[in-house]
Image 1 (cartoon, rainbow, N blue to C red):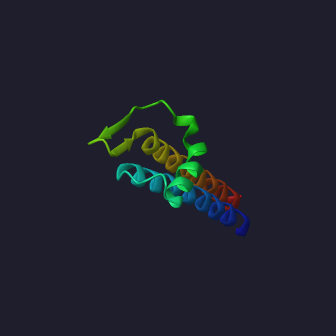
Image 2: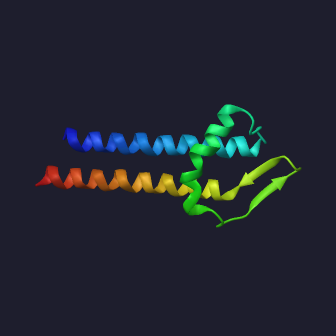
Image 3: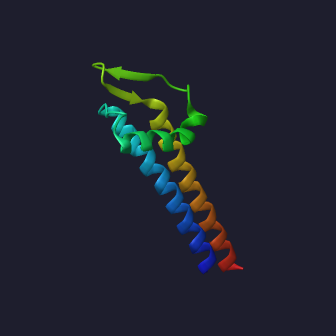
Length: 101
């Protein structure tokens, strides 16, 4: 069924982009990337709305004054990954049910 496969593809694309942006933020924060670099600024600005629901859940740890471990971003990454997995599983379940009828 092409429609369900396309929906699954879109879900994978959207959640893959979310994972890419959050993963990039986690790495840039961890290594203390300079906010004056345009790619770093863009990454932080783009990922901010994705992190908004998770702000304040966990503390942010600063190591050696430069390296930042943003636990809320790591948690958001995991939650978005789980949501993407469950959505694709749900769509696959609909496909199986549709094909068995």
